[in-house]
Image (cartoon, rainbow, N blue to C red; front, side, top):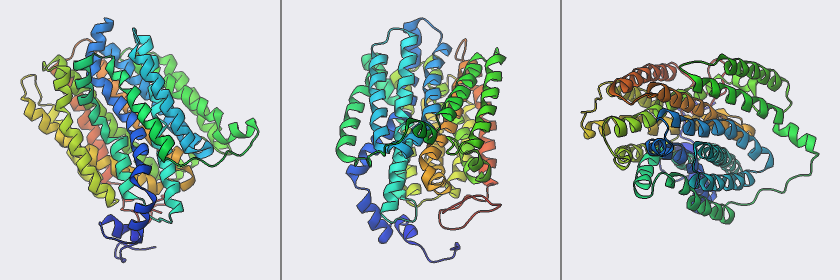
Length: 489
């Protein structure tokens, strides 16, 4: 095993910006035409996740419901995404990533049409489910395509430049949603938060067809064998567990214990089934043995729980308590997205892991603490300053966790692993929408925001501890595992 004092590898020379075989292979294998549709399709999910933020208040007024009641539009997309992300990864591994890509984009197009012309909460909820399901194909399928392409190009290390672009497209662009939504809603009304998907998906479809190579022809297999390879039973059990859990979360603060009991029962059945399945949808043994990967999932979930709570909670507070318009509230968050993207790039190119994760977690503690001081009289410039602390967290942690995932997951399961990583993240996001829905159920106030911030302080401290105490976090190639964890390969 190469030690941290060994001569730099091809991957390290490329990471430092020097020329070398790895850099040449990466430039040749991943042209701008090849990666553009991957980035665009991967961006559809985070953009839609946050695009709705500035439209919640107008939708509540149009539908004559409380702002808290619109949380179902957030939760519906997250539930669909939590189920569909690993499912799409599994299908991409078994049926071909390009096919999954195209079907996903088509579902987003349908969701944009349904939501754009919807006239009630039921139609909007269906639209968000379609959009969540369709956009979930982009990231895990892209990870499968990238991993296979890197293998064919003979690359031993992660293609940092490409993964960085995918991370920016797949997560950091979440910060683009509020300002984009603010402009669209102010100019064209809340329907535009759905209709914007139509031109985006048409472009994505055309670019994917033109520039992403076709999958290998499918082998003829009996339907039973296909179902076993995909693990349909595991997917259904997982979907039922997630659905019941969401129903329970939405019932808070007046808990309905029946859905929780169903979630526990189905979750237990899922574990037992997956332990016996020949090709499990979720490899429980892998999660138990590869503790480094499991910790990466937990860091992602807790970080996005806090981040999305700020994203949605702060946006609603800026509009309802601070008095900003939807467009102004969205623009307040724009610098956060720009800075996060700028921070992500050099970290990704160098395949850095531990350092950025520690810095990102520390900035989270500071940012969450600062939100406890906000009042409706706080100057907007001060609010922007605090969002830049969150930008450090978002930019530093997303790419580093993704690099860790790329090296920790088995090569033949990278699609499912990437999808499951997003599922853990969306579990955090579902919890965040539940939290803001409870706190802001009756009205959006300074005291409510302070309560949210105090909860985030606790979460951010947990993320910091989980990061600092994890000794397995290393830059790929610098060391191997401790205590049996699968690590950088």
